[in-house]
Image 1 (tube, rainbow, N blue to C red):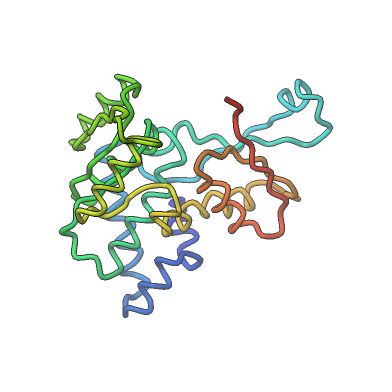
Image 2 (image 1 turned 90 degrees about the vertical axis):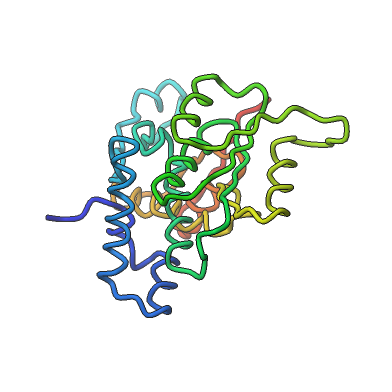
Amino acid sequence: MKASNPFIVYRERLDSYAKAMRNGWSDKQFVDLVNRLDQEICGIDGAGFSTTPVIDGTALAVALGLNVDLKVKVEINSVGGSHKARHLFGVALHLAVGEDDGTRPLAIASCGNAAIAAATVAKAIDRPIEVFVPAWAEESALAILQQLEAQVHVCELGANDSGDPCYARFMESMEKGAQPFGVQGTNTPSTFDGGRTLGWELRDQVDNLDMVFVQVGGGALGTATARALPDVTIYPVQVAG
């Protein structure tokens, strides 16, 4: 049966795979690792990683006045409810094939989706995780994080904070020895690796792919997509406000 897990389909392109091969792993060992961790994900989230759909975007193109053959890649039913878990499963593979001894707690600063994805993957690899969230985080997200057994820190803006208090507390946790486990390349450069699977997948799903519009926040998805599709024009799009 043909594999549908992108971390198996595209494994030979992954930096984690190259690292594993350099460290003496076999292809079977890497595939077995992906399958084992994916089974853990299934037990936690109800489903593991698979190719996410591309749907026809003609109606949207017409509404926007665009004369293009528009396709839309849908991530809402992905692990953790967003594309974020692609990034974080990739990070988990780097930890598994590298020299990480598994003793450091993981940490992430997030307002919702990334935290849920990180806590899901952390639970799958049996690692404790500290999650730093803002005071305005949605109760539903906090409830999910509690179910995933994450150590949740709700961060209020302190008198000495000049920026995001969640990020400040996250940086403090790193100084105390926590392992960054997020979707921002500045702290977790391996986060781009798993994110690239979305670009490779899109290439295989859409004929004559020449432009991609990518939502951006911290920039990891845009960077990963650009790295996966170096010959495609990438338009990062950020919501105003």
